[in-house]
Image (cartoon, rainbow, N blue to C red; front, side, top):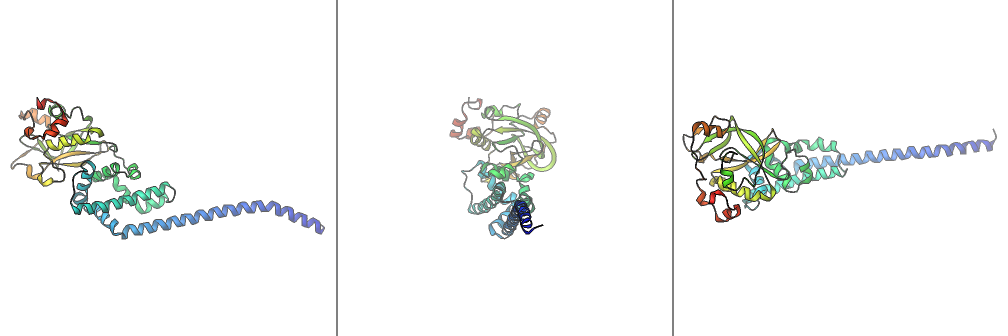
Length: 326
């Protein structure tokens, strides 16, 4: 083979190899870039994880959520969902600030994941425990707060069905089959959602039953949906009926609390009798359904709420004309 032929052959082979080499180099560059980007993302996730456990605001919030939720955090969150106009004391203001900082941190993680800047695997590795708390039964006030206060991405992880409205449960004089809902103008403002049960103790009080969550008996409840447009008025009526002063548990006969219904996977509000409001020697009710207890014992109930005359005129006007005022 002559020199010219060798040169031509090499040229042809080179021309054939060059595109292949460029393709290989391109794939290698993409692979290297992807690996470098994943490495950067992982390092960033690690740094966020470190700050999660060293940032003093996040540390305080984690302690509030894990160890002091019922006592120090749940009451604040419950007030901020339904009773936003109620003032909270300075300590609660500080605790809420720590909590908001924590929730914004988690919301940021989900946003970065959605934008492709954080891998789901890294998020789950470092933060799955804290995100999973959103769906534990006792964290109903937290779920409500997330769904109602603008944490859109966190709200998507919540399985409860109350994202757009509230639910309230009744177990006594407001059950269907009584006249109390109509008297208070609630029959046209509440829509029946489901029947269910709660575990605890039902106390036989002079004018109504009172529920406490201690105890092992199952008692019947009715769960109602509270339309958003009627929410403020409905809770004002119920708070008045149950003699509950939001933000002042010590001065209340009943208190409004959040509970979880596993059967229907939702959080609902229910009114609990306070310990000081249970008269001495009060009997407990063994019947599952309070209306069955009333029927079997012949218990006489007041035809109207005993404190009807103390209803504020402003609330009476908002309710409108019902049989209670005729």
